Amino acid sequence: MSAPAGESPTLPSASETLAAFVAGSAWAEIGEDVRRQAKRSLLSFIGCALGAAEDPAIGTAVRILGEVSGPAQAVIIGRAERFDILNACFVNAIAGNLFDFDDTHLNTVIHPTAPVAPVVLALAARQGASGAELLHALALGAEVECRIGNAVSPGHYARGWHITATCGVFGAAAAAAKLLRLSPGVTAHALGIAASESAGLVENLTTAAKNIGVGNACRNGLLAALMAEGGFEASPFAIEGPLGWGQASGDKPDLTGALAGLGREWEFLKNTFKPYPSGIVLHAVIDACLRLRSEHSLAPETIESVVVSGDALLLARGDRMVRNERDARVSIQHSAAVSLLIGAAGLSEYSSTMTTDARVVELRARVTTVLDPEMPKGAARVAIRLRDGRSLSVTVLHARGSLEAPMTDDEIAWKVRDLARQARWPGPIDAIIDQIWNLDELADSRALSAMLAASNGSR
Image 1 (cartoon, rainbow, N blue to C red):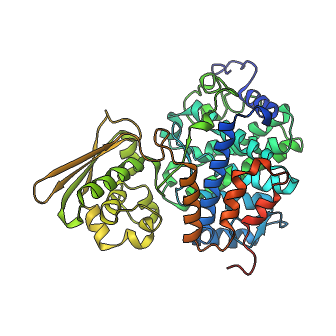
Image 2 (image 1 turned 120 degrees about the vertical axis):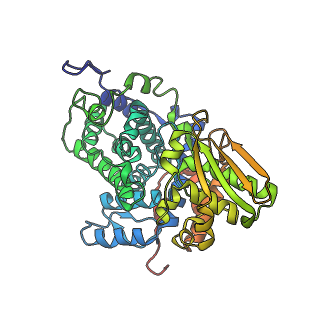
Image 3 (image 1 turned 90 degrees about the horizontal axis):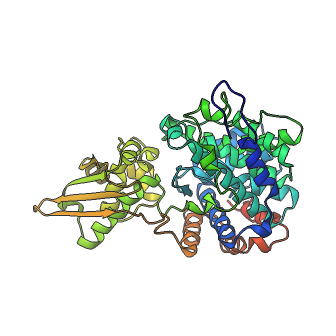
């Protein structure tokens, strides 16, 4: 698949292998489990984007890009504006990822759908593609980005690359190539071009720059496919070559392992869905705190101290001071405090108002963390010392929403309805949910995009 530095790589390249998979994939060969996963992922994404549609960050992006956007080609989800397809994809990807409420491929911590769904929605609407074609492209794009993510994990993320953005661009390019019906050769060029557009930093995780990286991944992936369609080319070894993307952004990529079983075994089926709008590593902490509060009827004033134990990833990502709502969404201390104090960990618990609430601030100060190298990835233990001398402890090995404890279809639909309700979106949310569950039977998917737009008088 690749060659040592200084030697000529051997064929086929990663781009060519993935391109042959994407271009050659037939909907009739896609199993019902993958089809259902595509619907679940799309529905979850739409809920997240609708929930964020009127957030000030989206308003700022719309205002800035509205001054430079081209023809009105695609909807901005939940809003009246229409932008050219590149800028619409950029804004919609930001919206889907804004609240840290989107889906997660646990092995890589990629959020697969935000960089890909806006591309398939925009292109399918532009071309009048069927619902099945839309879902097919989404599944393929997600599969490509997760496979490439597997090849560079965990070293890529550990070096500071925000993997949703850096690998999401490949997923967006692959999905666009499928809807554009590009040949395997042209699709390979699209993936190679995407390699030159890949960027995003973990250092920016608690700032709006993180969301810009996800928006760029979506827009740049679409641009890569369009440029390839127009005749632009890339090195066949742009991903794994001695001076390619993988080597430049981390350790030598393991593409042989990452591409094993391509088309037979789907990484996309390992995608998970969040019950809480926070970093995925915090979900076991939240579950443990909610269980302790419920089982012991805890009042916050009875709590002397809270100790959260977990693996290195949990502490590295979540042990932090809270200055704003973005910090709160990736904070062990805040997540534990609101779960114990309020008995919930929803959007309002991660709002700017809640981050400065005196009760939350005081309880956060009583939460400390301990490294437990024996704790599995994704697990956590919460131990509480009460003022009366009692000690309570709960260990959660598999958080709600994980592969071992997945959200049901009904729970995902409820989450989408709740997001639309909290955003006061006046659109036909029940009709949208019904249409997505039956999207593979829709001959023309443009009706879905039309339903996602807010009319000029609806706000």
